[in-house]
Length: 220
Image 1 (tube, rainbow, N blue to C red):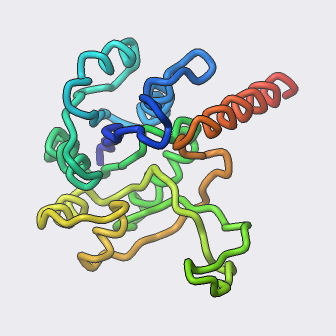
Image 2 (image 1 turned 45 degrees about the horizontal axis):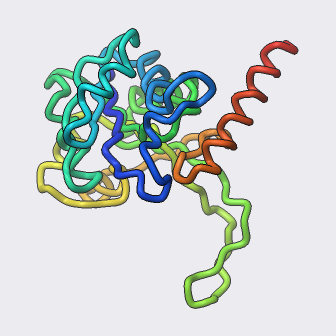
């Protein structure tokens, strides 16, 4: 089955204070790094951007392989994913959904998610253990045992993902929509370095992480 990836990059960037998707991350735009990793495992990549930015994003992504479409997103994340899904061929068997603001997700992580879907999972999410102490908003302690932080890329049987979105529902991520439609969600090991760029400090952390990765590769 062919694998396609929808990269969602239609956010406003309010907390970042600017366009985080096009911010420079060690010589390459944040979004371009996310798309490059997705391209390594995909027959095609659809990039979803906010209205009026397609030409600008197209320039940033020029030269990257397998970018088949850049489309306008919607008012919500779920709407934006549906806009991307509309550009994915009907014969795609596996669809990944990835946040454009997670530029350090490795091709190995993408492959791990795809392999789990190909093995029969309906919905797959990568996750990492929560290490911080947890409390509810009203101050009650929460046990962190067994709790994970969910990342992207998330992977799906394409038919089940389309079906879950057909009702126009809203959720914080696509696995939640599929689960609400009766699909079981499988967790695979995520990557601690797969951080999401939300604030300027996150970009600084991503640069440091890239430096560490490069230094490790040189030592090897």
